[in-house]
Length: 247
Image (cartoon, rainbow, N blue to C red; front, top):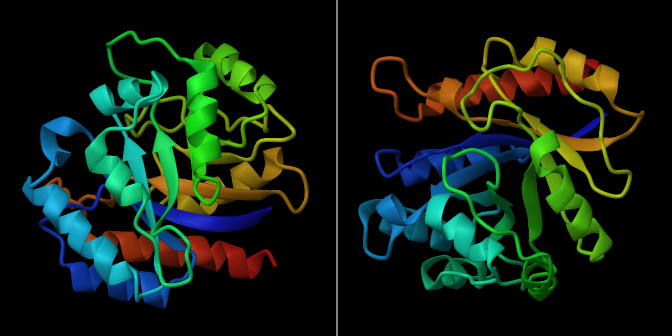
């Protein structure tokens, strides 16, 4: 398999922007994803201002940024509406015309609220941003929605995370479920276990398959429960060690 991104999720305003920039420039395969939902990420809130500052720094520093959309904003997007706060961020581009946010993950699995999934409207949003890779969580429960989105000829990728964002490793990693939609992997990944899990993921993928991995909970410092740059770097290093040994 070919690992395209090593995603580090849920850095926040307590992190140094310089530390994130330095980590992204040191490890070009690393990607940094903000969790976006209105209770903590509405305009002028500290996390929003922090990420906005990071995005503008990334316009002249070539690092990979992503957004994971949750809760009410996830529901809005699934209804075909893009909240203003995140639309202005999707629209921000580098000097070469490419969006600063290269990938957007819409977390349709997890949470207690029920919401409709307007396939045609979601497909329209995807087509309106052809330079952003849109990602949806895959579980058997979400298969019908994603199959309909596929039938609408929308370009999207899927994330296998059976734990629904709870950071629990699956009993087994799942092979790709749609030939024309790339699948990435998440669930319980940590600096300590990423190497062995890459071995296991590799076993279920076709040769030369392009994929990515995503870690969140186990990148946090145990004592503070906050994103830890040192743990993120160790996770990235161990994933890259696997890449080097499996060329």
